[in-house]
Length: 92
Image (cartoon, rainbow, N blue to C red; front, side, top):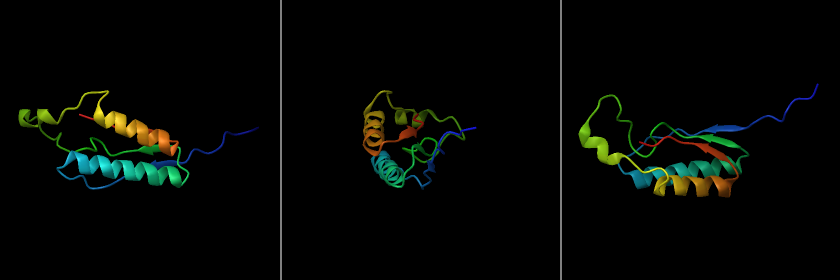
């Protein structure tokens, strides 16, 4: 019996700041690092572009919503392509 090659998975964990651009830079850095280490699948934290805010529904936070496709997905896709990985990311 033959088995498929193991799948190296990277789980990125980091503290998100209130600044989405900073968090996106951090996500891209983790994607690059994971790809360089041989990962083929990278999992980002839930709602990685902001601190997690979904414990309550607050209309004041609705402006954090992003279009998909949009700038964040374009940047993540480019980072994934460059690193040779698949990225799992959630956006609000």
